[in-house]
Each structure stands twice: as C-alpha cells, then as structure tokens.
Image (tube, rainbow, N blue to C red; front, side, top):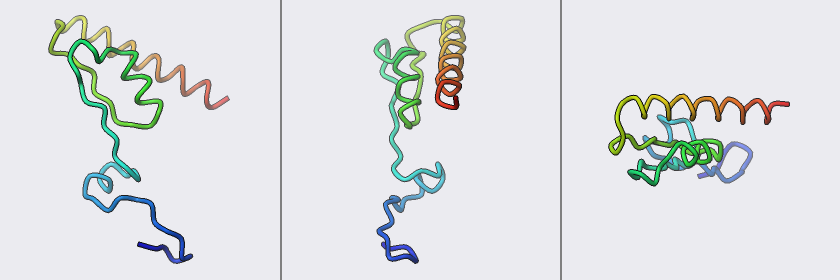
Length: 82
C-alpha cells in the first residue's frame, strides 16, 4: 500500500493496529513470576503494550507492583522530555 506521496505505508492493516493506533502491535504477555514490574516498565518504554502478571501474588502485592510500574514510567517519561 502506498500513500499520496508514493511512500510505502508501513502500518499493518489490521483491526488491532487500527484500534490501538499503532504501526505494529507488539504485546508483551503476562508470564507468571517472570513478568515483574521491571519487565513491564522496560517493555512499555520500548513502545509495546505490556501486561503485569498477577496470578502468582496476592492483591496487596499486585497493587504495590502497579504503583511501582506507574512511578517508573513517569520517571522515564520525565527524563525523555527534558
């Protein structure tokens, strides 16, 4: 597919990529104990859509991990925007 300027359109033409408004939907799935907050932050900052695994921990631990993820992503974005 080509655009008006005769440039190749690199977007994948799927419902998922259109709904997520991205060129290529890359999704890092939750992987039990392997998928901790650090992996979610790194994956998200690299541009993918990440999931935090929560089936191996209790709800209080999940909440603490979510807070850690949000905080680290905000700190990373602040560094990038300087």
